[in-house]
Image 1 (cartoon, rainbow over the protein chains, first blue to last red):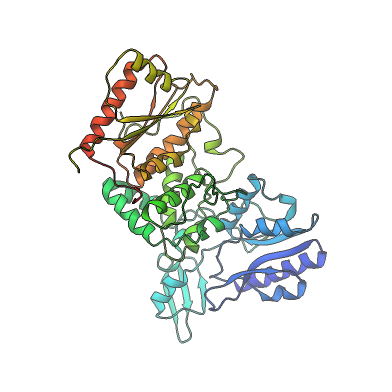
Image 2: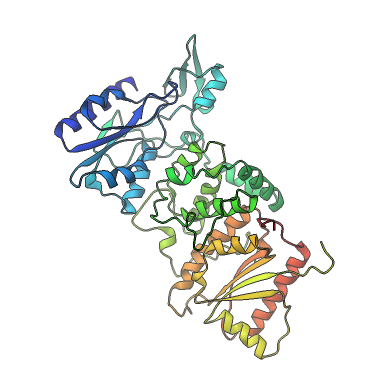
Length: 327
Length: 140
């Protein structure tokens, strides 16, 4: 990754030197080494602030919306994209929120991002550096070095990732990584929850949603959530009240998840930014699973020209019958 | 459960078929439980899945979405979209914990008064067995 960071800075510097890039979206050092934060580099001198390491994985794609709004007409926006952000960018492109000519995408063949919380638990302190190798991860703290299995320390979403390398890019750092999921069944969690009774499932969601602070971070980071007027903010009719009662939490989470049904790219950004750990991907994955099953989409998370809920076929199944408890 | 509780069902009925079907059940003097409150809508695809959540929030014990049989839509393709949306929404609402008997999607034509009456009877009975719905419910 050290090498890639150097390459990235070079790419960014060249882009600024060419003069067509107005801003470059990437990562910079955060309060802790293991928590890099987004940065918007606007001149050549600041390129050296950019970092790229095993921890820099916060989703960046949604920032493109705001930057595109601000950018001069003929200027382009640079962005670092791992596989997940690549899908997010595709989503925004298909939704016609931004245009491809406007973007300068520096792709990263991503070996997976280290979860600082998991790493801290293993090391007893937050590590200062990490190296993701083929089967394992080497964590470095202020005093020691620790080698652990990937499953123990990578972010959950990285363990299920099918798309480590972005499908579109203008430059690629490192090599393209072709990799299936580390953990085979991505719908494990959904299936476990489906197996319990309706009452237990309801109680489960009440407990999860009770924590929700309604900060809207999940919606704001989501590359599929790009409506100019959001139904969750409208006051007439007011679909969502400001109260955080259990009832309103269900309305919020139902609507947020359903409105990205068939459009979710499974980047996991919503769950990652949630400050209180609501398992939002359990909602999104249920919809992904059903879209896959009902409408025969082999990879329902990959963006394409058409959307599963924007089209139909004459012999679609009636998904509410059979197991769904209706004759 | 209070002694005099009776199931409350909110029914969204397409004006071209299910609503006319309900009308036929009435004019044919068929008997069915007075548990359903019909909301007339222009097409079953007018029903946003959020309507269903809202109905449960506001005290419905059951929700029925009824539209034209596939192929019979007054607007040609509306109910095909309904079918896709509610195939997902029905499973999703159940995934959030609502019993499947409480929320149904059915096709009812303008000629199927008997079917409409039977449907309401069946749903009312199913929901009576489950008891009042407390899930997603607003506290008043």
